[in-house]
Length: 495
Image (tube, rainbow, N blue to C red):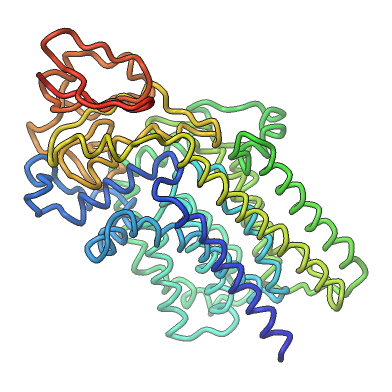
């Protein structure tokens, strides 16, 4: 039908446009993005002597499930570069979430144009914090739920294999969307047909052993159990504070009010769709009834879980945007001209959101970045670099955008950089025995947030360079001297 073709074309077109922010600048203001770039470089070039990684690091791929993003990025970086690899993976999240949600909405019998409502939500707080493996997991989660709905309705070996592959990929992406998929899977089980239970368990056969091993026998699994099941541990926000804080955890990413206006516009379009749909015959299916368990689980986790636990931060907060995204398939799109009007309105809001993000990213690079590439050029390859970022914040985005910029040295020139998650239980890289930087152990939590507390004995004489942003570094005579600076960055070399 032409109408179905035009609806699908609209979804495909906006999905492609949603990836524009991934490519408009070289240095996007995503807080953890440099860490991912450096980890991708280590995995991609571990044996390349020009980078010197094998002298200082060991790979710890077997102890963590936090692998898919970095391993996929490393494979892409062997063809292109960590920068391009990150761009492709970010595009997979931005465009792929739209397409995966389109598939899911179609499978549960709703108008697939509902997926366009996710575009204004894509550049959210987890995204601006650079929680990219988690967000890639969200994309895979929607695809896995869509495949499961179809598998329940029309089981086949090919669909079972697809569900199994997506389940395993989801586990190795991030444990939070993996567990949410588990909730949806249990809800979608054909409970009234016991003969089908075994068939529904088969796709979990590849993932179940590695999940049980990770949860029971790794440090990362133990910490995750504490995060998700120890409801008395960590810091919890009061219920009313969580309610009033909901939007700030979803879409409050820019320091101006542009993102708030776009969020309100998207909410009004969703409300208008519901109002215009009122009176039409409900399209209730077993799929969308069971699917409702997913947003319910998200909102429960948002209020029940701790905000942080051990080295894991931003726990409960991320369920706010998960609830907003997973609730979209429960909405309704009116039929006829009213549906076309709603689709037109959501298209305008989605395009506005993409343009708004693009402009803010361009402003960040033009107005705040400074001559960062000049700082990189001032340091020779494969050295040891300590990054002390005294001024990490941006006036354009609500995060510490420059906090991990020192990791870009490692992604381009190799060597050793601090701060690093190397040695943390969830990271796929560790320092080799006897190669830890002073004081000889993994960096303490929040090391990067408090550069003023880093002792000179932890810096000199181990590091060849100190990269600083903002005032605060005053090395004693005979330790480091400044060899390059602009009005934002400075490079100091060891005397």
